[in-house]
Image (spheres, protein in one colour):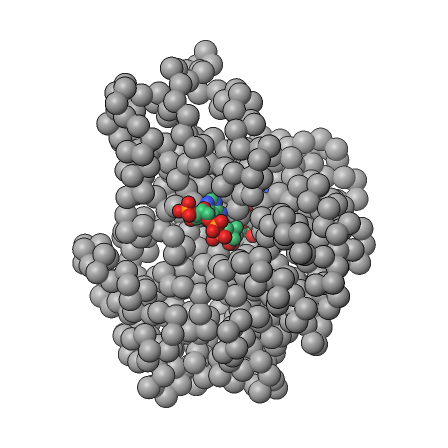
Amino acid sequence: MSDNLLSLFKARYKTQLDAPCLAYPDGRSWTYGDIDRLTGQFAALLLQEGVTPGDRVVVQVEKSAAAVALYLACLQTGTLYVPLNTAYTANEVAFFLNDAKPRVFVCRPESAAAYTVIIQSAGVQQTLLLGQDESSPAWKAAMQLSPLESVVTRQGQDSACIIYTSGTTGRSKGAMLSHANLSSNAVSLHRIWGFRPGDVLLHALPIYHVHGLFVALHCALLNASKIIFMPGFNVDQIITALPQATVLMGVPTFYTRLLNSADFGRQHCAHMRLFISGSAPLAEKTHLEFEQRTGYKILERYGMTEAGMITSNPLDGERLAGTVGYPLPDVEVRVADSEGKPVAAGVTGNIEIRGPNVFSGYWGLPEKTAQDFRADGFFITGDVGVLTTDGRLTISGRSKDLIISGGYNVYPREVELCLDNITGISESAVIGLPHPDFGEAVTAILVKNDPALDESRIMQKLAEQLARYKQPKRIIFIDALPRNSMGKVQKNLLRERYRDTYTGSMIK
Ligand code: MLC
Ligand code: AMP
């Protein structure tokens, strides 16, 4: 018996091979049969490159049908899929290549020249170039091969993917997710969100993170649903596609942007069944305004890279704005004190979780893994919240120093380390401030010792190091950072002082 996740998908879509799977907004489309064949062809290509089960395949490519097939081909061959944000710079990618030590690196054709040095110094043996159309080298090469038919046998606990997530120390950690982690979560979500024949998913998320890759794609694949596959989130394109869809999954920015469009309303949603939000807190105001405008209550759920989805508001019961609902079937959620002892309902504490969805550990970091798990197997999420007596969870904050900007996590430490390396900056504190579009905006508070140092030079230096979304939207110079008696920067005072920096008007 194999627990390979791909076998689960195949079993669900095998009678639907002529049904539409991926449909681009420009009219191009692939049936389930097409994607199944393309998956087998990419699997054959990976074998040709010499992969064996357990090898890592690091992938930094644009969203495309081939990117989906490549992901499924990694499952088929038992290799570990390691997707990277397309915004990462060569400097960031170098870290992931050195850490994951992939057998194969797949990148965009246009990145090849800039990556030559990092690929060589990381000792990567094979590099494939995959672009968004069928003429790009890897896509073309795959299409010339006979599809691999067999699916490698995997046990539930075997890793299927490594998803990198940044950490409070500034160093990224790769969360190892097993076939069983992914399948248990997919099956639960498919069931509790009531996926049914005829559902059409509007997919506008990136496919290198948990939300777009696992939550959205897996539900649709289990349902053999049509996926309207958008290259990214564009309000006008979404409004045009909504009448053909039944389910939309997005980060809160999707919903605030829809509400900012005067054209958007009930008339676009008549065919819709479900709007789901997650990855960042959905403001109560957005939830209520969306309901007023469309008649739909957004269903908010809570998850994280290390565990996929953890809680969800109910499909049929009360969807309460400002809460993230109830634990998924089989998932245990407790709110605990600093020792891991559960606190009473209504008392705020650390959110800890246990269940078949929870990852097995961080790649190559056994000590860090051990620190984040309790002896009884609960994982300490770094989120802070409160449970009601009937088990409904509200997230009230985070114990980890993390900014969530438009659904992307930014760890201040990583940005501070880059800032501290710039000559002329003596101290830095990076904080998240309320932002009307991104929820929170990365903001740098700096003390400089070179009066000539200006914002543009700092931004230029950061651009060489950090993905665009991690770079501060504003830089504020001050004379000294506020510190407590232990010498620790009082970020809460800075957040309070600069709270209104972006609000009031729509600033990006
Ligand atoms: C883009 N930019 C961002 C940004 N996205 N800056 C900060 N935060 C972001 N999230 C930059 C761009 O590079 C650009 O820079 C400028 O901001 C304006 O960009 P834009 O054109 O307005 O952005 P857009 O491309 O439309 O992207 C916004 C977005 C996107 C919200 C659609 O960020 C997005 O798809 N976010 C979803 C992330 C996600 O999938 N998270 C799930 C993680 S999994 P310039 O150079 O033009 O100034 C997880 C677990 C769970 O968290 O629970 O789901
Ligand atoms: P990531 O590491 O990118 O997977 O981000 C996971 C983090 O996103 C969680 O630990 C939470 O802090 C946050 N998050 C996800 N969903 C929600 C939500 N619905 N409300 C508040 N925070 C959320």
